[in-house]
Image 1 (cartoon, helix red, strand yellow):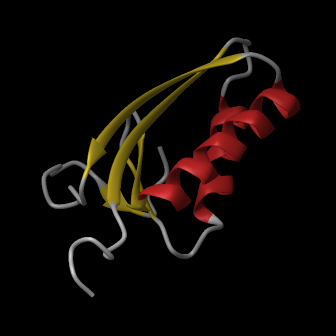
Image 2: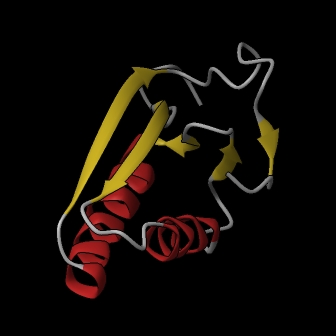
Length: 100
């Protein structure tokens, strides 16, 4: 496969700020949702969730996960940092499958 055919990789940092007093359930539900997809890697830090994988897959997953979160828990502010490429090796505080 040459570069033109290779899937684009993406690294996304997601922070959810639920607009409600009981903020843990929406955060946990969103993390559990994104962890259901085997072809992406999810890492949690104390402040955010990081998602790595194929660009189209990750963006579809985030789009659907955000909509489901709003439907289930009401308003919440999602802050995304989207970077091209697979940047898994640069954050020392990230751990695969850890809980935020």
